[in-house]
Amino acid sequence: MNIIAYGGGTDSTAMLIECVNRNITVDLILFADTGAEKPHTYEYIKLFSKWLINNGMPEVTIIKNEAPSKVDGLEALCLKNKTLPSIAYGFKSCSVQFKIEPVDKYLKVNYVEAWDKKEIIKFIGYDASEDRRAKESPNEHYINRFPLIEWAIDRDMCIEIIKEANLSQPGKSACYFCPSSKPHEVRNLKIQYPELAKRAISMEENAELTSIKGLGRSFSWKALLATDDMFDDQYNNIEIACGCYDG
Image 1: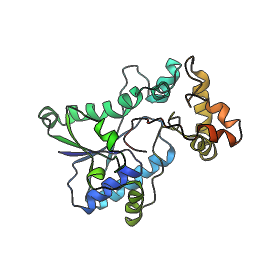
Image 2 (image 1 turned 60 degrees about the vertical axis):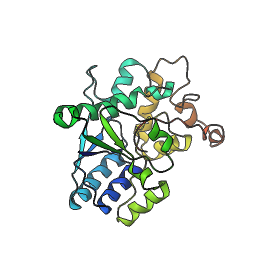
Image 3 (image 1 turned 90 degrees about the vertical axis):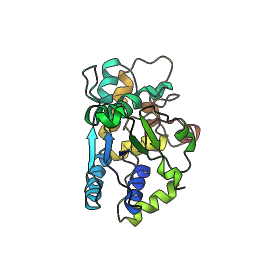
Image 4 (image 1 turned 30 degrees about the vertical axis):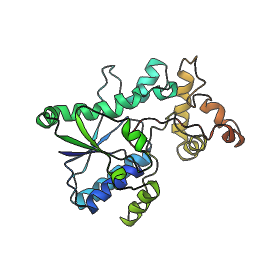
């Protein structure tokens, strides 16, 4: 059973297009929704799902984590606990809880036999430059496969594959308050989705912080958005991998 862990971004979109191009059978395409994706990601999933169906693929199935804390999504959980997404503190539990666990649970409940027999091959969209991330992704329940790495397809090639399919580019897929965002991405959020930027600042202000300054880890988004572009020179090269499948 071949399943796609679809991230809604450039890499996993190109991976699916190449599966069509290479006549690779895909049985299930799952998108784990944190409840905090940017609007363009939700719109792209609708558009791309139609393209997939027209090209003989399954539609994208959107799933969510039913959190035992009785809150709806990562944003609500952070607000309730007066904290920030775990990646801000150097951990990856947010991606585990809201990206990985929902997929595991869905498959365990709906595909019991394949799950128990460990017959599920999970395609993950890491491009050819991300072989290190692939090595950090073992899972006892799946046979993980990284097609873009196998096919030596890098990020630039992913963009071209999407163009050749006559599709628009999906844009970056991530929670709108993701601490791995770079300063220019935070500023773009304020320009493109000002209400979401306000909500991110509200989350930051609501959090009880001691070891970090804010969503930027070593800086707060509120402070960033109150400064000029010189702020970027100091922080633009900070790399914080969120652990999600796609960006």
